[in-house]
Structure formats: structure tokens, C-alpha cells
Length: 112
Image 1 (cartoon, rainbow, N blue to C red):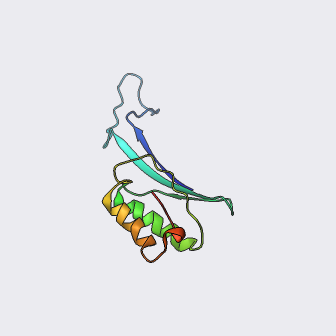
Image 2 (image 1 turned 30 degrees about the horizontal axis):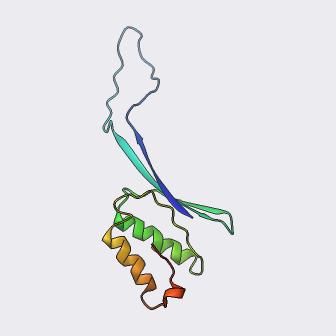
Image 3 (image 1 turned 180 degrees about the horizontal axis):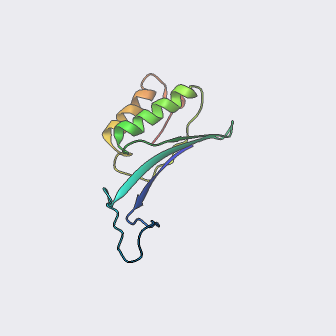
């Protein structure tokens, strides 16, 4: 099973030491920080895999799928996506189509 999440935060809260009579200012380089995570769970072995790509797009998604196939070549992979545009992109569809290219319809590895 595969899923992903995007963590987005807009505020920084914390404590610093300083003189009570002076305001303490801490510069923040990116006030709108964002991090994407890909997660995969092997239901059979109960192993969990997490990846932290720099961004979520067609290339990183395809890379994750290739990696999962590499580490478990005989496994059936259930993909749970949220419908992001890159999930439905031509590049992802072409990659998935390439997996079925030499197979009869009854043997297809995936079906959208």
C-alpha cells in the first residue's frame, strides 16, 4: 500500500533566552515551509517504508514505484492516491502502461 502526505506549516512558535527589556527577533528564511512524504506498507511482512523527496511530481512518484518493484519484484502493489495532477499525468500513465505492454489483459499488473 502506498500513500503520500504534504506537511505545510505557516507559523513558528518557540522560546528563546533574552533580556526581558528587549524584544528578541529570530529571522525565518522560509515562512511557508512544505515537506512531502511518500509512505509504503508491506501488509505481509508488516514493514513500513517512508521517503522524503524534495518535491512530489511525476519523476519522484515514478521513482518510488520503480523502487517498490525493485525491493519486492513479485509483490502486488496497491496504490492509494489523492488525485493530484501528477498522479493522473501522461508520464505516470505511460509508465504504468509499459508494465502491461507484453501481457495479456488477464495478466495486467495494474488497471486504472
